[in-house]
Image 1 (cartoon, rainbow, N blue to C red):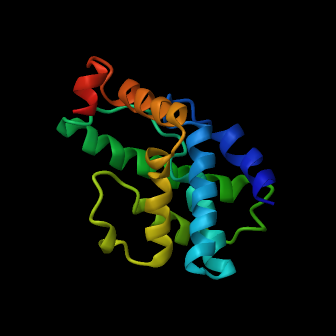
Image 2 (cartoon, one colour):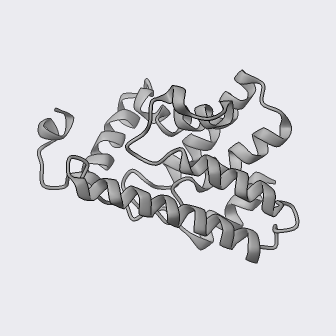
Length: 171
């Protein structure tokens, strides 16, 4: 079901094409969210909402912004609004709209809003599903595979600070 939903929605309607915010990041977030849901024993309903939020959390992301400058913070709020709007639009216009209720979409939208950067402390997340989504969104940073980590940092640098050296970006 989720693979079909994914093909119908994110890939066709709001492709992620950034060097970091792309389909690979989205897949890693979905997989990490699934593992987290099992670990904290979310209900089937909570898990469904979480996985939908994970799929759409960066939908239609503009793949840019300046991390160390004020402009970035405004940009991420706009990206969150785009992701939520994309989710709502897909629910309304998709052949899967009868499988996902409007209430489920609104719960997923609330979870997506918890991923806005800069983030409040993890403890401030209002429920277990929100904490799982926040962790899942950053799981790539903790990946043991050096190539995956390197691609992550290169991608974030390219999107956020293209005119800096890698050392400046990491510092």
